Length: 259
Ligand code: ZN
Image 1 (cartoon, rainbow, N blue to C red):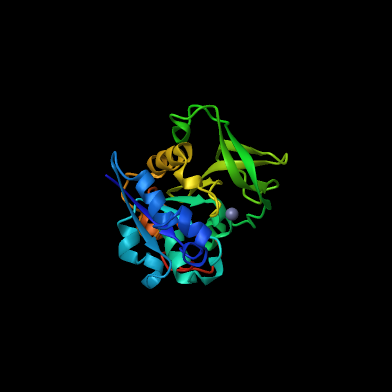
Image 2 (image 1 turned 90 degrees about the vertical axis):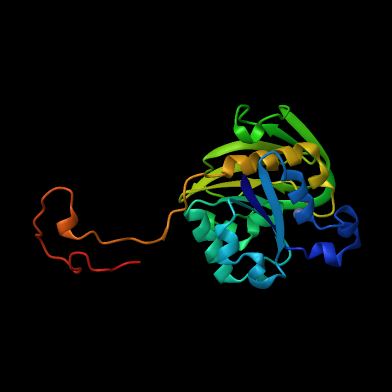
């Protein structure tokens, strides 16, 4: 069983009648309902819970974390951001949706500005597969459309992706790398563009298929790596081949130096 945790900022749903009408149980629960089943166990947590719902214990029991945030990126505690990043480096999968391109954990994992151009005009988005036999594209047609979406345009300030699975075309003429994969430490990371809060995007069957496929793809069955940021100084006596120390040095053999 793959354990997915859907993290929802849950601010627009409470502040906007438009969003609450489309997602009466919150976007996070809509996404959880969409990915649950067929070997995936999905539960939602929200930002207003203690430690934003992402305690050490919760992350230890999460195989894949799905993140939707927008309005309150700046209110996410940096300690939780570091905890999420370390969980990814140790092997947890992570999926960032739509405006999560500007979330603290995504930016931390990418190390780049992750900026883009945008327009809110309710225009048509057409997503094209660029990698037909990629597991995230399983069961999808070569292209599919979302009648109402926000536009995100290139240049997108991300590192060169490991794989590009989708590109989007918008009615206004822009294009965008809308489905991209990364490996960060031992963790698989996927960014998927659609999902503006005032449109019913997460009710769309193709979008749901992508997220469900992505949860399976991001799942890493190997045991988590303990201390993924630890950099040990290997004592000379532990070298695999006999070795004599020589030359000047600032650190003694085996002494802990850098973290
Ligand atoms: Zn948006």
